[in-house]
Image 1 (tube, rainbow, N blue to C red):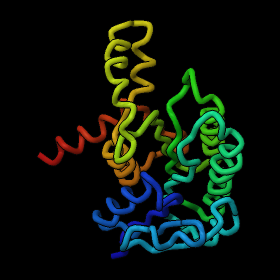
Image 2: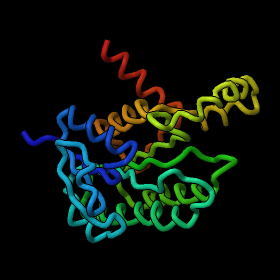
Image 3: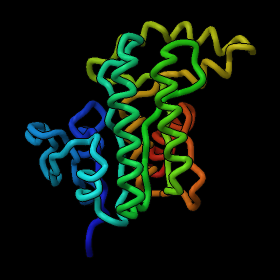
Image 4: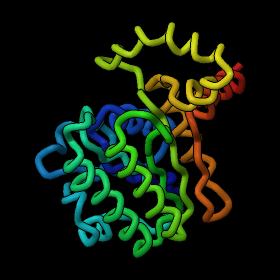
Length: 226
């Protein structure tokens, strides 16, 4: 029996490496779609396709019909000074991937976006929202995850904000914002991505997972494991 196939753009990144390892452990046939010269950074056990992730044609020729495509390409360490890069890399790559996925008859497209609305990082949020619209208009079966900040190795600095989050949740007018822009861990993100791979949506209306949904995915897995 052929293992389920998952294609990952950004497979050498912060989320990509961890997700690749988790999928391989679960028996998935994983193909990492990476920039030329970066194959050595792909987790052992995955197939590798080196290509230009901004090229619709190159992506199309690497995608497998009926597979799941997880799109993780994005600007590293986003900040307000990288607005042009957000458009040239983040938005351009999701548009190319969506167009290639339509041509290749991909079964399920998973996109990591960002929590929104938010009072900061407007250029980044605008680009991610545009990526979401591209997918919503594509006719593909889509899952969109909206984390705000993902805690993990070398990404722990927002922990000092936890007391502020706790206070905000006590204020009715700030409670929803505090929940939407809450912190999630890399483990929670990986679990949410795994569940998204394993349970594709039934319709072409995008399924959106906000911060509370992402957190809940790990709790649900822990309950099932008992």
